[in-house]
Image (cartoon, rainbow, N blue to C red; front, side, top):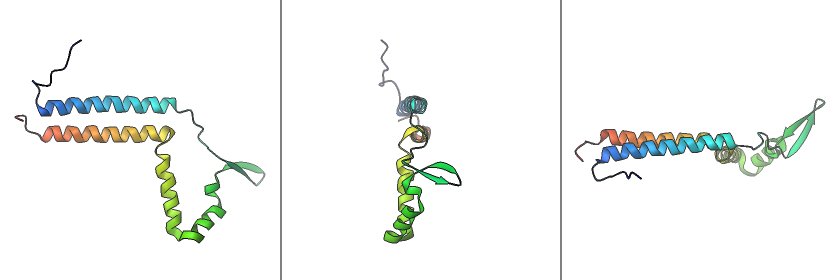
Length: 122
């Protein structure tokens, strides 16, 4: 097995290799997560009937829930609840795949920028 020898390489080359490895592993992981997502797109816990149709409904989307949030904490409470639900949604299913891909690309790009700015004599 061929071993990579770090002694002969400079810091710039090492950072470039590490960034490519991070990019490959992160993008492949996010692709596996995206393709392996078997969760249902609608996680409704209740149903509402209106105009002769039955709709999936999440309890947190009801007017009563929003009213109670405003009653107990005002509009800031409603905003905080929506923000919390959005942030929690980033870490499940296909959203997780996109989040992981974004973080991976960001880290790899940052490492490449740092490697580009380093002088080759280090």
